[in-house]
Image: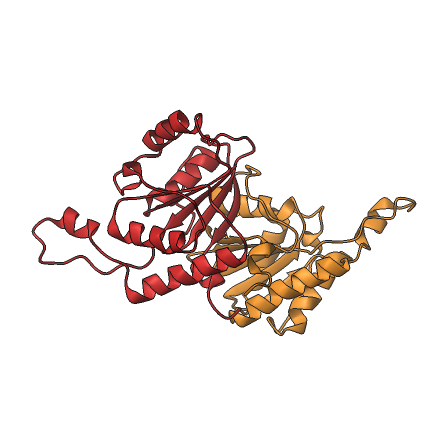
Length: 172
Length: 172
């Protein structure tokens, strides 16, 4: 199966005067340019006929807005908000929940939308069972992992693609 | 600096009746489809304004033909054939020669065109100093490594992109 790790697009800065800095971070929306880049990436993936069985997104506004852009293009029939995809979430917790639920449904292509450094760390754990911090995942970028079995497991992934959004942007 | 590892395009099968199977392998040309896919990838990189200071290619026909397609688009001012990029070549040998010569010239973007499993193994060594065989490099595909310094060193790379050619093909 394929797992796509998608980083949210470029977002506005936090309000420096906010009393609650975590809440303020959670509310940061995509900027106009951030939205446009995600739209271009999603358009390109649509033309390549990529489909996801499910998109799971971090509850943070910038991630949900990124997910909505994908959903608008009907790349996935289903969107779920997942707390483990927050910046404070952990792969182990997400993986446990995923294994519990994925026995019920069958998925062959899953996308998760979240944050750095989480997503590139998760990718390294799924690939090598080790965190190197050597994968560069830009905002709006995508890491594609392939699992030989139907199951997502640590150190069982192969790296299928790592795509900076620039590569997919206009210019044909 | 950036190092792009580019795998040759799809090539014809070896002549099964050849007396010298190594020589026969060395002569395998790109197929029509292989050539077309490499052309589309090179066209896309041209539109993205990617330039190399130098392309080094394996001497095998399918690699040299891949290099020629890039050279035709003037992506690089210079092409060199390098024996260490043959399937029998080693990273250590290539790296020693490269360090000897790169003190003379200054390069910021280098492309090498070669074979699997060499290129993805070289990438893993440059990233992690370990070979996992977990990077999937398709024919015509590209691995992009970024080095924080001007020098190419084992375990100093960051993975900037891994691009299956399909991602860059037509469809805009």
